[in-house]
Each structure stands twice: as structure tokens, then as C-alpha cells.
Image (cartoon, rainbow, N blue to C red; front, side, top):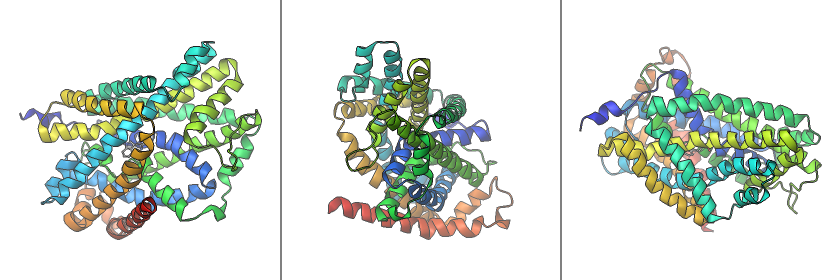
Length: 452
Ligand code: TRP
């Protein structure tokens, strides 16, 4: 069947690509993960180290993914196979596809929680207490599975629409709304009592909090938040036209991701202190802020409820709609990886591939929904180890198999005056030495800590 060639779409516009890639990057990792990590790791000092990780490791790896994708116009498995021979290249791609499937299977459950909370807020403010409590129960396996399946259905529907009609159009609409809602909420929270205490914790660095653990969490967070290490952005790069500047696009995507994470922290950390002001507990016995699940699904809804009336309803529903939208543009990119693999390598039409792969991942997600404790295990194996390992293999492959000069030839398309700038002097050095070395150190330490 030759038609799969014509089925490989393209982004319609430059902005469309940047927004789609930014939509992939911006997700639960930014709005939920980042503020939690900041709260856990001494506030502003974490932000500082995180920024360095994004610039020194994240950005160069992102450029590498876009470049390999656009050059080969393939899914991750096909891409590495095309550029190298032997068993190693396809293995990098397969590892990515597997990480994508596994990450998606728990990401869907958490995304389902956020989606469910839209209804929790509506039910609560409508006075339907029993219904609201039913949705709020994160331990209810049936309900978890139901919302994960709904979320997956939405993801499949968009993916089925293809690259420009489905993914590009959906993210182009959702990203701007997300930023506007976020900014309005921040402004409102700043008018409330207690918010300035949060702002202080968020912006004043405590340098004594910087230790090796913090650096490792920051690097892991950078990988996850920027959607790197498993070929998601490589796949998005494969739909790029030759006249788009890869480096510039990667800079925009990184800035958007870091910027939105920063905004999310600006909302959530002050909001927690506002909540504390109205008598809600936000710290454990050890004086540390509550993390992840408690933070987003307990403290914040309580804050919305304490606002009461129309305001509470408006903020509560907008926040969880926002979080669901951010998650949706990320699940799209996670599913697109195995789907593009099936389309390219097994010549299956897009719709069939999306439904087939989506159906299989849905079964995994149901298993996770019924066994919530699996989430921690999956995060450890596929995020903390899987993504950096993928990133490491990608750098090693690019530098020692494909060669960075060949990558530079690809990047030159759409970047006319590249050779006059600093880029050709810096980037090859980073992908060849700095990034692999740093990732290897992080990975080594993570494994060492896991095993000891
Ligand atoms: N970056 C997204 C977030 O911050 C999650 C995500 C989407 C992702 N696609 C990915 C993470 C690919 C790793 C790899 O929530």
C-alpha cells in the first residue's frame, strides 16, 4: 500500500508546529509537577537549577530530536533504522515507543482525575454533595477507569484527525486559552491575603537547599516537562517543513514550557498560602508543603470552596478545565509516537492505527486505574530511568553514529545564516560531550540510589 506516504502529514504553519510542540511539553508536568518540586526543594533555588538543566541539556536534546525527525521524516524506530545499521539504532526507537506507551498509561489516569474534578467542582457548587464526593474519591477504581477511558477517547479522536487538522488545530485553540486563564487566576490570587508569603517562598532562593538530590530532580523534571527522551518531539519534527528554523523553534518551545511552569508556580504556591490563611492545612508535620496529589486535589479544591459562590465555581472549574486541556495536548503527543510507528512501519491507515494502539493503551490504563500504586513504579522505571536513558542513547547515536556534521547540514535548512553565528561552535560540543555526560551521571546516581 503506497498511500501511507501521502498520509504522512505536515504542519500547516510555523506557529502551528511551535504550539503543538509546546502543547506536548506543557502538561501535568508543568502545572502540577513543577510547583510541587519547587515546594519540595527549597523554592527559588530549584527554579534556578531547573533553568540551567533546561538550557544546558534540554534545549540541545530537543534540537537533536527535531533534526533527526525532520531529516528522516519517520517515526522514532524508522528514523534510527534509516540513519544507522545493526541492532542499536532500532532499539533506541523501540525503547522510546515502549516508554511512551507506559507513560501514557498512567498519565491517562492522572489526566482522568483532573477531568473528573471539573465535575467535582460543578457538583459541589450545585449542592450535589454525594456526586461531588464520588468524583473526588481518587481510590475508586471504577471511576478512575471511567475517566481515563473518556480521556483516551478524546485523545484518539484528535489523533484520528491527522497532523494539521487534528493535532495542530486542537493545540492552536487550547494553548492561548490556557495562558489567559492562568494569568487571570494569578491576578486574582494575588489580591488575596496570604499570597505574598507564598510569593516569597517562590522567589527568594535558599541556597543551602541546593544538593545533589535537587540537581537530579531538576534534570529529571526537565526531561519529563520538555517531553524529551522518547521520540515524541522527534515525531513532531518529522512533520516539519524544510523551511522552518529548527533552532529558533526549539528555543520558543523551551521558553513556552519554562514560562508556563513558572506561571503555574506563581499561581499554585501563593494559592496554597492563601488556603492556609483560611485555615486549610498545607504542610505536614515536618514543615514541608504537601506534595502532588494532596496539593492539587485537596488543598486547591478547598481553596475554591472557601471562595464560595460564583467565584469558587468559576475558578474551580476553569482551573481543572485548564489542567485537562494541558494534559490533553500532552497525551496527544504521547499517543502519536506509537501510532506513527504503526502507520509508517506496518502500513496501517491512521484511523485504524489510532484506534488499535489507543485501545491497547486503554487496557493498560484501566489496569493502572484499578491499581493506583502502580503509578509510582511506572514513574520510577519509565520517567526517571527511561527518559534520561533514551536521551543518552539519542545523543550517543547522533554524535557517534550519524555524526553531528550531518545533523548540522539538516539544521542549515531554514537557518540561512547559521554558520555566521555561535550555534555551530556550541551545539555539537553539547550533544557530543556535555549532555551525554551529565545524563550518564544522573542516571548512574538514580540507579545507584534505587539499588542501594
Ligand atoms: N511534557 C508533558 C508534561 O509536562 C508530558 C509528556 C508529553 C511527555 N509527551 C511526553 C513526557 C513525552 C515525556 C515524553 O506533562
